[in-house]
Each structure stands twice: as structure tokens, then as C-alpha cells.
Image 1 (tube, rainbow, N blue to C red):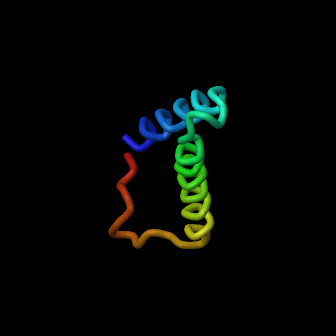
Image 2: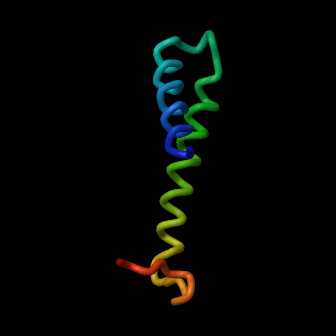
Length: 61
């Protein structure tokens, strides 16, 4: 669901870029995309060195 939302935001942002400044709204789409990417990067950075406890890990087959 998050990937689908991100895709819609990305498509909408590219659609707004070509319309010019008269319509407005392009900043919001780009802010959502930037926030999503920043969140993914920060989660990866904070997760470095942190491992899940053994009881939370999924059993491999």
C-alpha cells in the first residue's frame, strides 16, 4: 500500500511540473516524495548495528 501511494505521488508530481506555476500544488507532491525518501534513508541509518532479538526473527526454511 505504501509503494502504491508513493507511485501515485510520483506520477502526480511529474504531472504538475509541466503545468507551470499558475496551477500550484506541485510543492505538496514534492514534499511528500522528499519526506518518504528521507524517512526510508533515516530508518536505514538508525537500523545500522541494531539487530532484532532472537524471538522476533522469522524462522527460515
